[in-house]
Structures are given as structure tokens and as C-alpha cells.
Length: 292
Image (cartoon, rainbow, N blue to C red; front, side, top):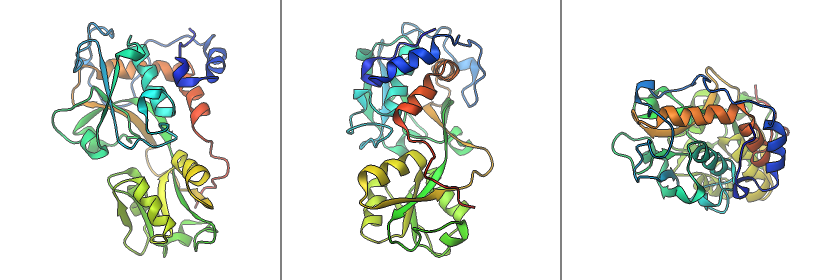
């Protein structure tokens, strides 16, 4: 089956996707890798049967600002950026047209907090964790994540080759993220790490020398060092510890949509769509050595 990706989401990559997926049948019974009880899934995965906030519409939440390479120009609705493109593909697999998708601002922490939700699904680089699954549902994973340390040329850690080389550095990360968790549990710096409300604040601290380096996910590391920071440098990737970190789409706890959204993500993975979207929007790991 050939995936029908709207031009707004992929542009020239649509031809590449067609070549990848033309001979790739969708697997209807692909196992879900994460939370979402099957008993809560809608009987059929069509807009008329899905219990969304607004009938016939799919409301998608994300943070404001929405950062690249996950989104582009802080405009989630433009279909550009990895997560925007993934969101529209999920919507399409559920039977929604682009005009049926409504975007809403939801802060990172509010999206995974217990209580009523202002979205049907939320896409915002959420790592799937047991702690978060106590409050919300996750779809099947759509991206395997690595964390990385970035700095600027000439800094004390620009030539770091190991975790030991980072021990005495002043480091920081965004609050409530797995980047911060990796900083405290993998690097374990001797100085208390700096905590930031968002990656923009972290980047500013790096630019003004408040910190020696910051921890972000690898695609963000490539984007920041390549497009946002003067003389930005990727120090290296952090080791993968324990269960591989994965991003999942967030839904309300026991949402009736979870099963259908996971099925859509599984289809995107199995027919090669996710791989094409990664190639289109996310940088590879070349140029980011692993720190040991």
C-alpha cells in the first residue's frame, strides 16, 4: 500500500516514500509497544466512531514555542518538521483530512499531568516512562531517542571524550525531561546541574557562559549546533542505559482513542513511513561520537 502523505508534510520526500512503501503491506495486527488498554479502544477507527473533543475533528496539542526539527517556524499546522508530519500521518490513517485537524497550545508539563485534557492527542517529544504512564496513555513508539551534550567551540568540554571529562563541568537541561534525567543519572556531574524551563533558556545560558554545556535529544543537538548557535559543537551522545528511550504520542488516561492511535503508528512504522520521515526531517548520528 502506498502511503498518501500530504504535500504540506513531506514536499519532495513523497516520491521517496512511495518507492519505499509501494511493496510494503501493512500489518493489521502489529503489537503495541506501550500503554493503552485494548478494552478502551474504539470499536472501529473512523472519525464517526472516535470519541474526540469535537465531533469530526482531531485536536492535537503541543508546546508553544514548538521547536525544530520537530516543528518548523513555530507553526505546527504547516506540516513541516518530524512531529508535525507524523501527527498529520496519524490523523490521515484515522480518516481525518488536514482541515479536520485542530492544533492547541499545551505546555510540556501540563500535557502529562493528571486531570482533564484539552487535546485528543499530544505530540511533543514525550519519552515513554512508567511514571508518566501512571497519569496518561502512550501510543506505540514513533521514535528511538538518544541524548547528547552540546557546547560551543573553545569551551572547557569541547574536546571531552568520556563521561569522566564532564564530571566537573557546569551542565544544564530542561526541567522534567529525560535530558535532565540523563544528566543527573548518567553524567552525574559534581556540581548541581542548572534547570531550565525550556531549551531556549538553556541555549541562552550556554551562549552567555552560565553553563559549559547542555543536554538535549540528538536531533535537537544537531539543529541547535547547526542552525541556532554560533560555533555550536556536539560533544557526543550519552550511553543508552536500560530500556531504550522512545517517544510516544500522549493521550488521556484510558482514552478510547489509544488503541486506534497505536494502530496508526504501527502502520506507519511497518510500511516504512516513519523511516522516510526521519530521513526527511531528522539528522543522523554521524558527527556525534558516543561518550563512554
